[in-house]
Amino acid sequence: MAKCSCIGTYIGDECETNACEGITCQNEGLCIVENGAAKCDCKNHFFGDFCIQHPCDSFCANDAKICSIDNGVPRCECKVSYSGRKCECPPVYRRQKDSSGNFLKKNGDDAKKYCSDQGGFLTFFINEKEHEEYTKTQRENPTDEWIGYTQKYPEDKSQYLTVDNEDAIYRNWADWEPNSKNEHCVELYGEGHQDFATGEMNDLDCVIELEFACRFSQHCP
Ligand SMILES: [Ca+2]
Image (cartoon, rainbow, N blue to C red):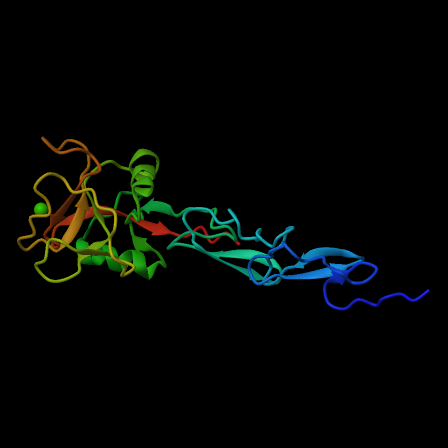
């Protein structure tokens, strides 16, 4: 008996049915017929019945937005000082000490340089969560300390950069700060300031010597 050899996505004794009709494959996937049944042939690492799922879905941690496929496995592009394939390792902060173990004090500019010479950054915060993490659990000594911010434009109180040269999105200024007269560095208040809370920020003359902590990556693989 004669038999039709169907082409494309048509099936049936007379090739009368388009098996892919009504099936929409997403993300550039193509509907194909395999063993008489329609299925999506997914592209660009998407998978699932309609090519909607991707290995990067919900994969990256800590606000890392960029995820790509590296040798078949997802990898995230982490925010500054985060590490690990999923960016699951947050930064660590180390209060700097001298050779006798006493907390080191330096002026604001030297503190920035000291941290960068060690492959880190003078501590700064990219969001409220980091600020809270530092002030509540990682701050080794709750005294006034330098943090890593600079004015974006001279004598402009409205915009700051973090020491990795990004716009400072998160700031926690004390009331009336920054007041900015000859104050080009930024400190984090320690305990004991009348009217001001621990963890608030204040712009301050860079020549003053304060303690400081450096922010480092844990270099997780
Ligand atoms: Ca000030």
